[in-house]
Image 1 (cartoon, rainbow, N blue to C red):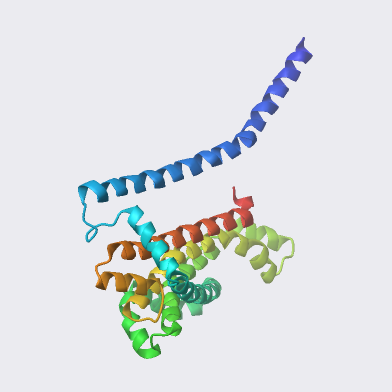
Image 2 (image 1 turned 45 degrees about the vertical axis):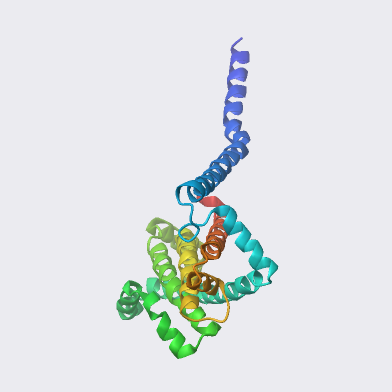
Length: 275
């Protein structure tokens, strides 16, 4: 009788331990459902407000009107051209800023002299309203892609630097001392302990840079460009075309949400040991 009870108890315990694994897909679907419900509810309220409360598309465009504006831009062959221009500017600037930010952050975390030399410049430039520099970049580099890339780099690089340095400096000393006791070299300590420990911080800086980079692209395009989502917004504002203006804003919002979700997925795949 005692054996049967113990077996039943162990079986029940195994079932209890297995239940979170079995319920995990349902929990994920629940989170997705809440997010989708929030978005759908928000757009529904937006549609109602724009149709009945502010029935003037000069002030507020309904989501249905925005969708029609996006379809019209696509049918005229303008949408993909503008998206491609902004995407190329963002990707080039974001990649350059990410690589430079990670390298500079590593340098600051490992060199006291480099930190003393560069920290005043980083703090000062990070606090500077760099968006106000967009007209200067266009004046110096023209309205081509170069000025937009520099604008993106200027906005993205500082969060990456700060988070990379913070992640490396918060590496647990116990882990460092432990691997050194086993004869690990400085390079091995960095690659096996410090860098993996800093990866959550680095990913946080990269995700912060997504929104800042998109802002940099649009602001630079608003001041002068041949193509881009910023030009869509600028032309729509000049013509008081609110559906087209909101179309540009929605495109940027969707890009931001999609890129952030992609980084979250990549972080979950690479940092599965963190949970």
